[in-house]
Image 1 (cartoon, rainbow, N blue to C red):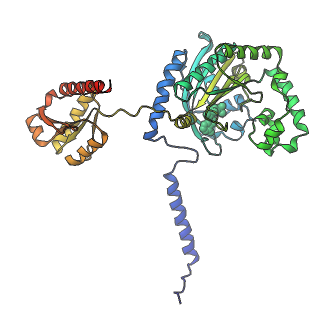
Image 2 (cartoon, protein in one colour):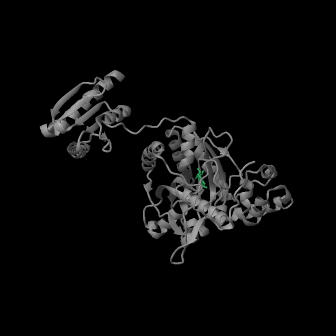
Image 3 (tube, rainbow, N blue to C red):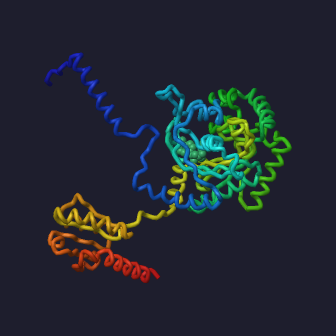
Length: 459
Ligand code: AMP
């Protein structure tokens, strides 16, 4: 017979639940919020590589960098992206701040750049004004594969001109950038969603097409029909894709001007030998697009699940914000998606540079003197690895060995008193004592020699 089970009092049970809640709460404190991620040291090389390619290319195309605040007024995005879009109606990280202002974490970059253009009177600069940005964006979406709540975008905006050659310049820049980042020639999907006039007519045609098909599409799309009918064409649900077959085509509703614009855009793309797929259902999720819309997909993304980025023309956005007629076009690409595509394509990115020398110390005085030497060598352009927490020489040499550093400087108590230092070659195991003051010159000489031998071996 087992021991009788002890019945816990009501209070004891409450105490256990309360303790568990405290533990759960504390665990939450040491975990990232849903959809937010750390970028760990081992992944930084991808980010560095992207910046090292992106910045020179985009600056060569004449763009200047702009950094806008992460917090903006919520109404900026309501007025530009549109209150009926998913981004604004469902996904904004918005809140009332201590002054009672309705503010939010920016969900995208274009509206903020347009705001900056107006705020800083860039109308008076030579047009078009070409700006680029890189930074985090926030959308309260359901986190899933390659979809996060904090993600990063780079974006290019060309503001102040309505010529189709600029849309094509953007597409050229973007495709060349992706090629240089090693993911091959990406797929370009393109459409033209017209101006205010043709959009109104197309909207009517779309509504009457779906009137008899409401029961065939998902409940989300039924909702979209009344709020933002174009988005029905974007839905990835099988039943909505099926119902879309036979839907009116945007191209058939374009006015003469938009049609001419579309033809010119495609002609320019042909002239530049940029391949594209016409996608008459490419509407994009933001209200501000007019005329050209395009998306860029990795050629490896066979399932067509994760666009690398998208863009298009937004000729009314600035006018809607400040009343001045300033046409513009832009592109935004996701960095996390790009890194995923790079990894899929096995793109080799440069590793963090190995230190030139490892500086080991033995004893308190040597520790301090080694820090002085570290700083001196750093200023001379020599990269030095060291570990001030380890006091034993053996453990320091083990670290040096693992890091693959060929030269190690050893500063012990005796050397501090003598004004010398030991240089050890980790490959041969040979050691030499040299004058402490001669270290920078001596190290540089040896590094040069090692580099020379390395080059000869690799010839
Ligand atoms: P959009 O601003 O919606 O046109 O998105 C442009 C690009 O940003 C997309 O093609 C993705 O590469 C990236 N992106 C947008 N939303 C997310 C997200 N929630 N998580 C990761 N990347 C995203």
